[in-house]
Structure formats: structure tokens, C-alpha cells
Image (cartoon, rainbow, N blue to C red; front, side):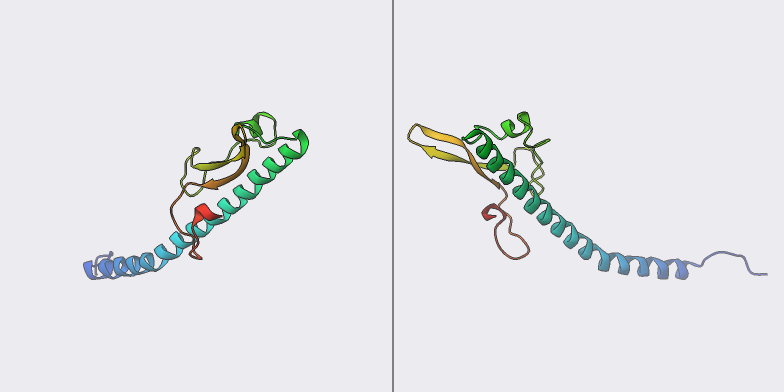
Length: 124
């Protein structure tokens, strides 16, 4: 009667198949993570910009800092930049006034990376 179990050759064959599958699935997963980050960045920019516009429509001036949007309940929280993965990853554009910089009128990511379509994230 033959002992039950796997031979070394059978185990190597299974490991080769698993490695082959992992090499196929790996790039697909990293690509989908990149697409998810892009979608999250687009959505975050839309939500924050809308909050800035709503703040201006209600109060007649732009918020001095992004934190005012949270304090005044235009946003529940300031989202983390999904590309830089940092809370302070946002580049804030201030309104130019005769007295210097005014309130926040726009927001961009600080990332120097390019999106899947070749455009720079910071230009969105």
C-alpha cells in the first residue's frame, strides 16, 4: 500500500500554478486600486468645491480656511487626499484681493503623479 500524501514534484507544480496566477492577478489589482483612487479624488474635489460654493452663496464671502467648512457644517470632515494619503495633501487656492490673499476659492491635490489618462492630478 502506498503512503498517502503529495510528492515534491506535485507540490512544486501547485506552487508554480499559484505563482502564475498571482503574477496575472497582481497587475490587475494594482490597476483597480489606481482607478479607485482617481474616482475618490474626483468625488472629493466635487464635494469640497460644492461646499465652498455653498458657503459663499450663504455667507457672501469665501471661507478663510478649509476647516471653516467643517466648523460651519458644510462638510462632516475634511477628507484625506486619496492620492497623497495625507490630510494636508490639499493645495488651497485663495482669492486675490487688494488687501492680499482672501478666502479659499478652489482646491487641488499636491500630488505630482499623472492619472491613467495622462493628465496631472494637480490640474483637476
